[in-house]
Image 1 (cartoon, rainbow, N blue to C red):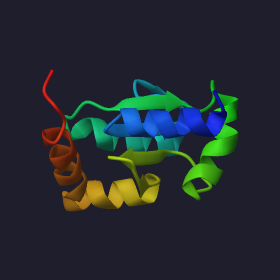
Image 2 (cartoon, rainbow, N blue to C red; image 1 turned 180 degrees about the vertical axis):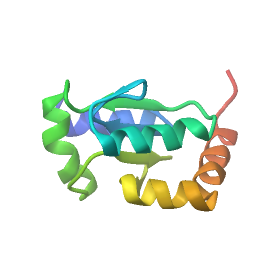
Image 3 (cartoon, rainbow, N blue to C red; image 1 turned 135 degrees about the vertical axis):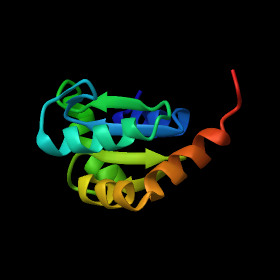
Image 4 (tube, rainbow, N blue to C red; image 1 turned 90 degrees about the vertical axis):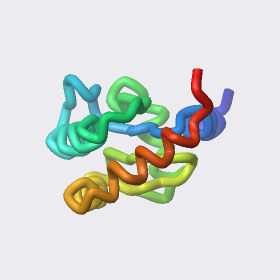
Length: 109
């Protein structure tokens, strides 16, 4: 599968996905640490992709989303933004609202 198709499928298959450096419990950069902690604090399930162990995704996701940096938070197929936007939304309470609404739309298992 083409890497752009892989990225598209990840974003489509996961209601909330965070592309970051490292893992939520072991972030590899300060920005990824802040972003993952803000997302985890909202209490909703989310997927993540470690771009350090996926160099093809790291190289191509900025082209796919027209966003040059990591982390990147995607919700329901739309790019929310990077660390600064995630932190602003977290502090205003908007991040929890967006993630709660997104997860409420998920079919229950």
